[in-house]
Image (cartoon, rainbow, N blue to C red):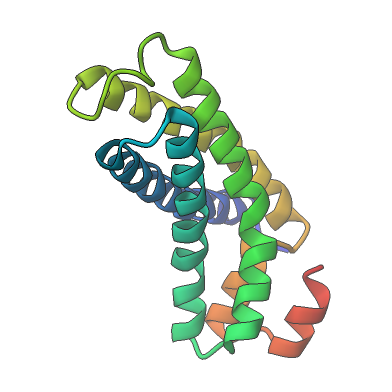
Length: 162
């Protein structure tokens, strides 16, 4: 089993992957929603959908580059990232909703961006223990790292990640 520092580093890396995907999806969703004149609910739904899309994509691409078959990569990524991204998205949106004026500030207002930075920071802190829990059990990004390093048989990893 990995030592504590290595597991914390891996959990931080996994959480940063999720944070990057969530931030890209959130900002792009808000830009599109605002430009298209979508309602707040439609904009949030678009942003969350894009956050999941970017999060999954950012985790899938390194596996594909390591020669992992698409089906195995998607299977591992869905299992590894769904809980983390979900926690991050719930926390991010709750924080944004709780900051007075953040949702109505608009993309050119510093209140929006400061609120977004706060929300993503709190979301990172909430998702880190989720990723650490999964890694401690040999799931989540532990499987992704095994596959990227070539230490995992694709069929065995696919069968054991559930």
